[in-house]
Length: 190
Image 1 (cartoon, rainbow, N blue to C red):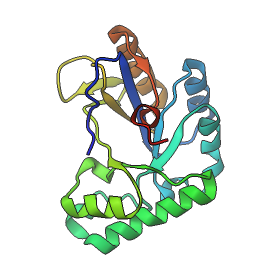
Image 2 (cartoon, rainbow, N blue to C red; image 1 turned 90 degrees about the horizontal axis):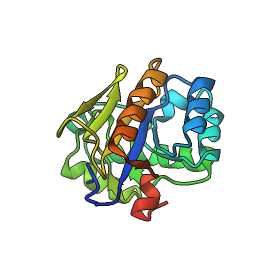
Image 3 (tube, rainbow, N blue to C red; image 1 turned 90 degrees about the vertical axis):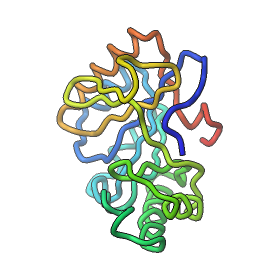
């Protein structure tokens, strides 16, 4: 279970969820800023155009697991086997389309349980990743403090306001003097 990386290194980790809105602008901006990110994709939101995310992979980002269905109530509604099936389905989809089985898992909606922890491990992943900061609606929201800190994991989404959210993240990242690095590389699980 990872919410923040305890480190003195001046680094921050960008994670982007779902895959709903796919625009050339998002690819261009990530390349312009040279930001690698952990992309927690949901099969049902990327299935109509999975190759779109290859551009992010080419820029150094990695595809991670955010389930097949994005059931935000999976912790309460589903038992172990249903959770495992939803995770394994995305593991196989990611391998088929992106050539790599994800090593990290982001629970839809952020809720997790011991049953989910077991399913994540049994699906072959190394950790559940949540966040303490997020770029949302063109601004930054913090669970702790009022600025980015070394080791923060930042949540964003592939939404219509992607450019505004990325601009808010970039301003906060530069103000804090942090370098954006790939979470998987820092953890040694790429």
